[in-house]
Image (cartoon, rainbow, N blue to C red):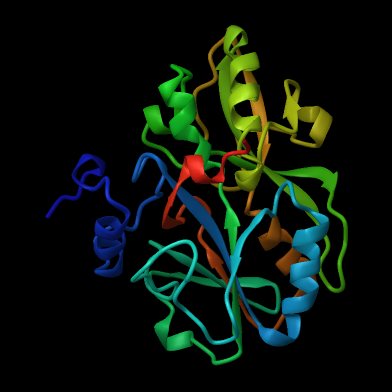
Length: 265
């Protein structure tokens, strides 16, 4: 059965489809109006250092919810959800190396796992689209392009690294409204951290993203870069914990929380 985005605008229905293994693609554009979240799962012995890393780097790592050790059901972001099954794809890291990408993690679950759910920029894309601002990766049916930058994060314990950013090209006359709109959503990365020349933040080739897929940038467009929730995965590679489970870039946890509930007043 072919699953299309238009068939599934309800978060619970989408999570049920994902749980059955029927959706293994990026989640951009799914459940319009509802927030999405990045995922990091670590053994409890690493949890304090990672929590501190998030607190010291709120732009790329805005925490939405942290679960108790061993808990796999969220209490704030959703109901009847399971972080072990309800994302399309998961990255499994061992000693900082990406070992495999899997559609579920029940067989890997440990009683000492602490789950961190982090705001995702997919959440403000609905507001951009409503304002008539193009979101190119949705238009082209691609995963959002993401890049490792030269911007250092604030280290915490064993976790350190540089920021990852996501990129969306905009016509010059749409930059100001895009900045204004996304700045209302600090819980999901807020406004862009860089506009224009990618080399200024250490990106050598904008046509070759480190994660996701390249999108069309037209001659009259300017690239805008937002802090990205893949940033913790760079820190995990550097920290080399025994095991870490994270979302595959672009494959998020879809919540029951409306984007507007996360917007700054």
